[in-house]
Length: 424
Image 1 (cartoon, helix red, strand yellow):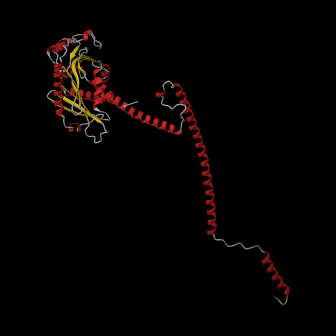
Image 2 (cartoon, rainbow, N blue to C red; image 1 turned 120 degrees about the vertical axis):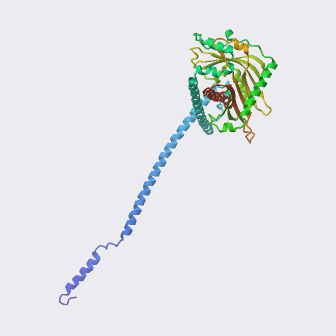
Image 3 (cartoon, rainbow, N blue to C red; image 1 turned 60 degrees about the horizontal axis):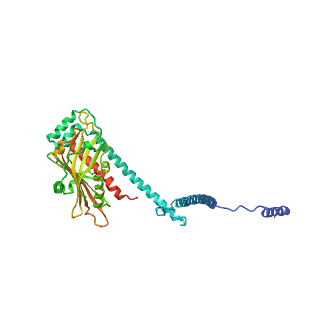
């Protein structure tokens, strides 16, 4: 305090006190780290709130969709109930044939699920059948192209070399001089043959002779190795052996879920009915068969006449192939069933053929044996074998007939096996 001017010092103190008490509070010292943490917490809170809003919106949309689906299902259910009632009303006279419950039966949600599963199963079956039809059409197209390339001008004499007697050769060359074109025709009075019925002893002798030839041919490929080292076509293994001018060929396949008895029944019906036999043969070949003698329920003598419309013939003249053969079936002790057909030697019939006909020899067999490789008795399978033996002088002709045998086996599988396995 100044002695000369004490009021001046007092004013300074008062001024200092006034400034101390009247001045605003000082700003506290806050670090930058605390400020950044506060900002991060605010951002996290904003993101969390936004996420909660998105979840709430998604839940509302999902609930809306579920409500719409429930409305659609209820509408379908109502339509199904109405359709069931209408069908039940129409089928009152035939209640056993109705696949739908009666109006008194309550329709539950399980029925809708069951019908959905059945529809899906039918779709899968339809896809499988479509694929099988595609493969069959592919094979049929290949066979048709093969037959178109198979020239009859070069193969008629080779294919039927077993019937090269002078009388049939005379008929062959006489027919080439004719200029008339004969259309395919059914059996009538003009096409009947001079056939002397066989006695029972002669029929049994034909069966024994044919079975011996079949056994001799099967002894050539008794080992399955002959089939395993060759390419397969639609599951059919093949075997071929040439001895001189004679070709022995066979195709084999294991068929599941079918017995030899079932196969023999359907195959016998196919080969004894002319209308059904035509289904085994290409559409371009008109084949007419008629049983001319029945020695027993398992032994027939059949007259067959075939005309191929896809072949141009010799000098514009088409020749029909004529043959008379025995058709029989036998049962072995091990459950194996054999069906065979072989031409009968009939010199008189050959001499009395028409000018537009030519004699041909056939020898084929079908063998159906139980598959012994299955360990479980519930697994049923059959080994099906198609075989034949003919004389050829050219390899390409034999190869074409072997391919035709493969396609014949495939057509037989479609007609004889599929109807047995499919139940609607």
